[in-house]
Amino acid sequence: MITSKKLLKQKKINHGFFNNKGGISDGIYRSLNCGLGSRDKKNKVRKNLKIVKDKIGKKSKRIYLTHQVHSNKLVFIDKKFKFDKKKKIKADAIITDQKKIPIGILTADCVPILLYDNKRNMIAAIHAGWKGAFKDIIKNVINFMLGKGCRGKNIIAAIGPSIQKKSYNVKEDFQKKFFKKDKKYKIFFKKKKNIIYFDLSGFVKSQLKSYKITNIDTIKIDTFDKTNNFFSARRSLRLKHNDYGRNISIIMIN
Image (cartoon, rainbow, N blue to C red; front, side, top):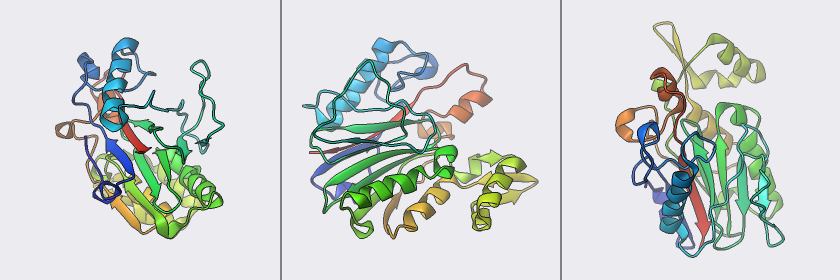
């Protein structure tokens, strides 16, 4: 488990960015696969999720996850929220101000973002792939938090392990899509030997900064690099695997 130095100083919360170590899954899912949407055996994934839950909040009933669809939608867990196991909530961010509710998101190269307002005592977990970030999932989450009494200067942000620019080569059409939305996005692209590289974590960080969030911890660990022990969709595709495991990132108010 990897932690953010900035979030670790906050005594009212627990958090963690988990890699693929410490679970019970086998094969391409070895070993801490937390993706129920993968083709891994569901009983093993559930046991992996329990391993994670016990490290963050042993007394909690479950980890609250959504059915991630690379959207700009979020879900807010308040006192009135009722969890339904049979119902899939399609969203790419979770926000709560309730205690003992571990909220998490799954990634396999996308950027996991954990937020904490230490005055309002509100947390958020964001799944920011390029699609969700492009559709303004981050802005939607922050605007929602501001509407609930949070302030940018009080929000601590941790950008977790994700695919780094050196490993994230993209096509020209991808680059044009960003340039069309805003020419300022050029700074997140670099061309080297006719290959275009995209800085996803840098793009995400810029969106946080646009809301005057300056207390940001960026964990620059490349999930594509096998030696870092994270699941990677892009690496699995290159190795011609038929699926891949999912990393989990969690935050909880004690």
